[in-house]
View 1 (tube, helix red, strand yellow):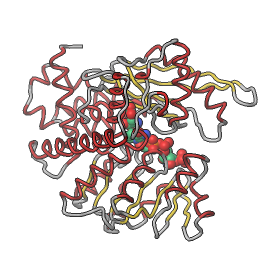
View 2 (cartoon, protein in one colour):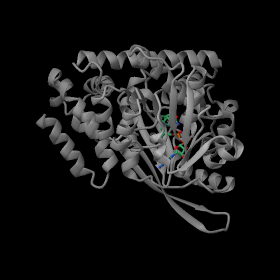
View 3 (cartoon, protein in one colour):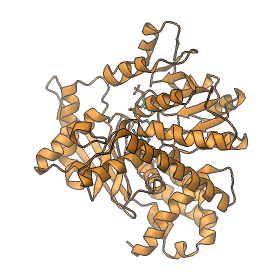
View 4 (cartoon, protein in one colour):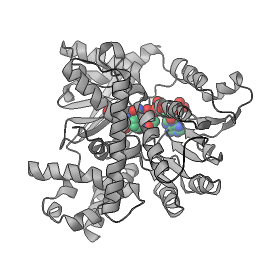
Length: 445
Ligand code: NDP
Ligand code: 2IT
């Protein structure tokens, strides 16, 4: 274990002030002792030392002018973590909390997640501390254009392919694609994913993360002898991942009783009306509090993360990192929750994960459970390369089969490496081995 400990300590020392990155690296590295024991050649080839160091990190100024004519400056990031198995691939996040440590943790997670999809994609992530909330359409457009005016030189269909994440949806991808196309004078549809359907987007990409999350959860809980049918479900967030998670849960017979945004949560014992959520969040960009105006039977509670106090059978954290801590995990367990599946990236703290594992809660870690989004991005890239598009049913069937494969591979890896019920270990090991083997084949680069 001392070799692994040394790697973790080096990462902490070399990347000061980036706790989220330390957390993500520590979790993966602690899973890898069993792999290193079987593959000492990875030590000789410095696989671990190399895999924790991004291949390239770009930080840039993003100047723009607001509606009052005032000059504003934000900071932009793109971290190109690993190109061992394909071009860098991963979303862009616009949120005031973004700094280098957040983008690095997300880029690091993305490497293993993308490997698990079985698609030929490396790992990267980008973003800015820009806050889209309360900004006009014109301000968002000018920001996106300025962001792309620097980013364009670092990306490309065979180099690095960004997509959405928190604060970046089809509107922002559209503005960024428009600016990229204008600068390059070339319609390179494969440079971004999550595009609108009429200019190269893929059917099911919008739904993919949430749908994929429920597909894999369904498999996990069936294997555990339980069912989604009739389950009371709590989903944090009310953005892209949360909304399509809720849609699929309802299709499979579960009842979503609570959802949240960054201000608070709503509780509706009869089941949340998803059309209202879509109208409020996707169309009007309003606060979830407004749900109560339309459905007076619902309750609204201030305090975004107190959503975990709502008793439920299954919990899907789909908002942000570290939103579910030890106390919340204990409350969920005490209230009878039997499964937790992570739609967000690293939403459960390490202490919360320990609570779930020690109480036999079925637990699907984010890098496997939310991989349906990036997997469908890779399907979008494939369709762009073919200059062709598949039907909804075709893409959905591929997504389902990808999630089935992920579940099988991480369960097998967990079993093979001696930790039957630990899908975290299974996901880290299965995701890692493929990247490590590609790195072995390609020499010291
Ligand atoms: P959205 O911006 O569409 O939605 C995010 C939701 O989470 C919103 O309801 C937002 O509230 C809430 N939220 C965001 N930050 C915070 C915070 N700091 N505290 C409390 N609530 C917060 O993002 P996505 O749905 O795309 O992403 C959600 C999570 O899923 C992220 O962790 C992301 O990395 C991950 N993910 C996304 C994928 C995708 O394809 N989009 C794929 C895989 C993972 P509010 O509306 O008030 O801002
Ligand atoms: O975290 C993620 O996997 C995403 N935000 C989606 C990335 C992508 O390239 O589709």
